[in-house]
Image: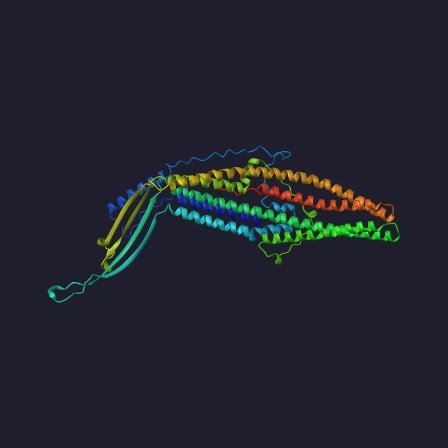
Length: 522
């Protein structure tokens, strides 16, 4: 199994384990009959406890039945096919390790290193840990709160009065009291408020996992783009230096002609200006090269001073094969769409929780333990005590606090809905734009290669005629400039084509994302 496949399987397993754990929290029965200090309660107490537990089970079964769970309509516009998809529509998704399609070992090594060393990915993982902690916090409200403790109290009453027989004040004896007590409280989630809050946190944790996938895909695309920028800068530098050498060679020929009187100082100055112009084009290319190397170092989580790459040329890269498939498949392929979908589900549950806050809250509390003046008889039957209480609280007036919370949750729900719809339409737009760019840049590269070929032939003929003394120097100057510009433009067009491949892979989600079994629809 490749490194990428192992990482993707590990992420899928983590999501599945998290969701299974959450479902078990929601559906488990939280109250059980627990004897105090190993002592079984009398039959009547056990019968009362059984009735209470049965009532709790019935209440839990009815939880959420009184909450309106209406959800907004998605109203998505999904096209049948992409406008620029040519030929039969293939359902083959991009490979998970799509960067290997360029057949560059150095690029593959950089992308795989970035997946484990990138700081943004590390932050996204930390966000997942925070979201999991929030799930645990939200799930605690569905469980009873129990605590226990013990105390030893030593006291003496005041002896300010006089003793019997008028013999003076007597000293009151010391009293020692021992107590072991257990407290338990539980808020019945009769209206499903806490359960909805847990499900909202659950979906938020899922969204954070898809957010990590978005960061991973963006990082891999950034690495590929920066690497291609480095290769293009190296190609342009080689061409620029070759152009300087060619222009200098022509300058030497013109100076030789001037010495024999067949060229003027004006022609020499014009060629010198061309040589200087070509030399001046080198520093900006060096800037581009060094800055993109520094960008790659940052993506690798390393200092630029301790990072270097070999590079090479764009000519050695292979154009990978990629098919866009059907637009409807994009809803599962793009991690940002899956993230927006999970966030929408989270807001749906938040609205349910905020609406349930208007209903009464029911809290059960109990206390039981042992209290005695003698440690030896602390756990005897006479020392046992208990108390149980039920409290119902109905909100009457809170200054609009709960109404504001509901309206806030509803506003977040609408915002999440529009964000989800925009992410879907943006995904279709990204694919169309990438297809347009890739198609046109491929055509442009082929045409520009013809321009370079013709310009190189024209320059070669011009240089030969210059040596023979039968060429106008103005024509030679024009052929040089045309060739130099055509060569540089060809490299930039080739770069744009490879960047178009990366954009298409990114627009398609970089391969099929993991499908979470049993995931609820938005």
